[in-house]
Length: 166
Image (cartoon, rainbow, N blue to C red; front, side, top):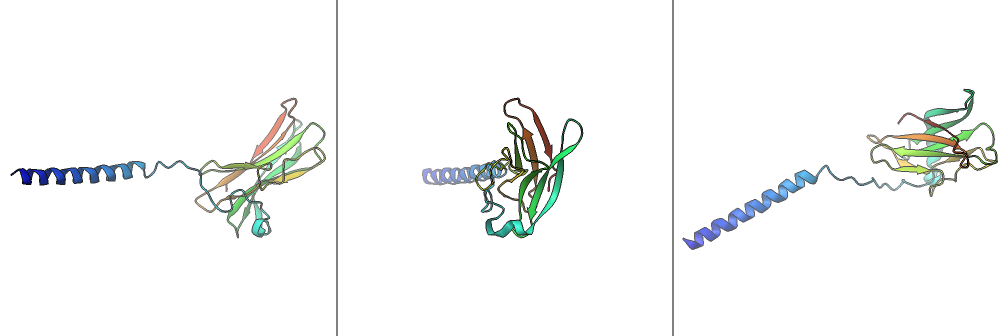
């Protein structure tokens, strides 16, 4: 009788353990909140010639206080590399005391890069007119958007524009 009871206890313990493991697997399956990691993330658009298949998928105008456009921010997409990046282009060179930067942000995990990130060509400094960000992998169902910012670090003056997502 004792032998049988020991066998029943072992079986119950094993079934309970299996149920607990199964339950934990189901509970944690959708909870992974890590950033995506793709081989093209953070690479220059000129890496593997991605920029050559790049087209503008969305754009937004930078508008001054007098409602005049003075620049544009673009969300670029490479159909070959399946990547997105941002580019800001100003109509005139940035004057002394001012800077500009572009940002690309992937919606699925919030990964954000700017022109100063490794793989970009650096923020727009006085005398310059444009910069581009490194790329983020953007194959559907992923999507990304671009943001351009023109600012004066000393005064805090700021103008920015966002593109739609692609």
